[in-house]
Amino acid sequence: MDSLNFNFKCTVCGSIVSRPLPTCPYCSGLVTVEYKEYAYRIDRSKPGIWRYSSLLPRFNEMISRGEGLTPVSKVEGVLVKNERKNPTGSYADRASAVIASYIRDANLEYVTTSYVDDFTYSLTFYLKDTVKIEILIEDLHQASFDDLLKFIGNEGVELALRRGMSVRDDTIEYVNPLTIEGLKTIIFEIYERGLNVENIVVPMETGVLAYSLAKGIEDLRRSGLDVNYNVVAAMIGDSRGQVVVSRPEIRIFHVEGYEVLKVLSKLAKRGFITKPISAASYAVAENLGSSIAVITMGFKPYKVTLRERRLKDVIFKVLSERGPLTAYGVWRENPRYTLRGYYKALKSMELRGDVCSEVVLKGARRVKLYKLC
Ligand SMILES: [Zn+2]
Image 1: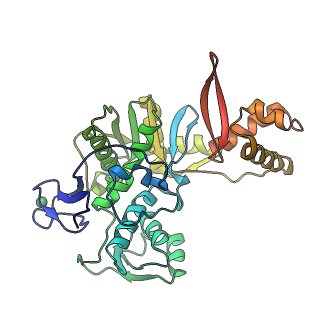
Image 2 (image 1 turned 135 degrees about the horizontal axis):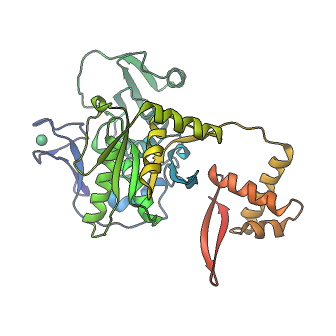
């Protein structure tokens, strides 16, 4: 075990524990990962979140299914990092990548986990065909119907009703030090992009996401970097009851239900679909200004005309062969469609994360280049 670059350490009494336990066996404090050395390096040869492996736990294998590097775009004037673009559609995939790597490293053939919306499905996706999972469900009413259908169709998954609390050697719960390590990579991506914002606004349910981002900032500072983001957590009404972890530097904002509904309908009218808790983060980011909201957002299915679909195909082809290009540059390659048509299509494709862009200086002018992501 000498090659370990970290310890699982209790944040309260400082005890070191051997497994990713949700809480310390001696004092019930939160357990997190402490590194032996802090250095922020980007390794672009590594897949997914593992580009930040210098500040992630070191395992024999780095399991990735393409999580991370989610797109940042402006939605009605608010900067948004859309975590929906992860493989199973949520930021939980970042946690699953780290947990699955740990499980492989520890040679576990079987794990038990309590059902948590988004997270459990993500974990089954990352462990598919390698490890059997027993999912404990406390209350069938809480389990999403879509998730249940996916579990029932998966041979490696066993469903059971939860009876009392018991932590066994093979138990991996959502709240654990590895989840925090995976989720904190959101902050690394924001830092790597050099986004000039003061606040990073996240939805607060259990508080694990906000905690993880705050830890990510701490890890960057311990690596000697000057990082000055505030982590801001958005909550609907006063739902403090669900919060299991927090840190003093996290600012919490309560958004009233009617305000959430207003944002939901404003976004829906413009074609964006999101969960109430994401809408709350969006509302806080909008009010604070100088913020980025970390949310999951989808798009209303819309009818695409044959012409629009062809235009999109042309754009993909041109960008894959000649990109990065400006909208004008794309039009020059294939002037069969109008320049205005290209502008419109590229803007909508970027918003949906179908293409990416970068702004570069051309002489004294800033130009936007589009490319495949
Ligand atoms: Zn302790």
